[in-house]
Length: 130
Image (cartoon, rainbow, N blue to C red; front, side, top):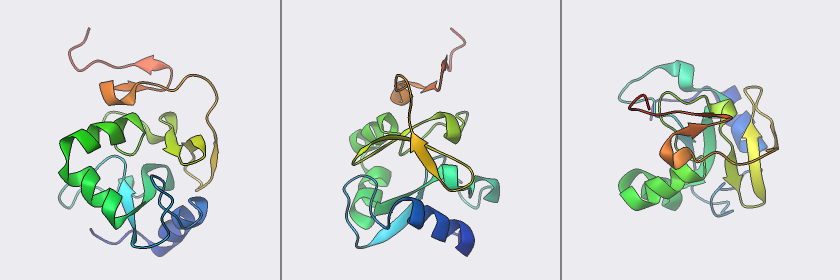
């Protein structure tokens, strides 16, 4: 993965208490882009609200196992490219949080959107225009 700027990397690790969002592990930590940058994609996606801390095990499973990836979408670990990260909560080991562009997080208020099926925040999105 191309390097995320150190300031952003440190802000994400600090926000996530230097532990994996999925399992709480403190070893083998990596950053995961919620919306993929793609192969050499835009650095505009290197923002704290689009990054989470995962351990190597969880990150590898998220990228290589389709069922795990679907579960990861439901938990906000992965998002579709048309979604806005700040409008899609993330399930931490201690509850749902909204990630903010300034590198902080706040508890999610209200119902959790069905992100695995393309729902984002208060608006339901459809790939087919229905």
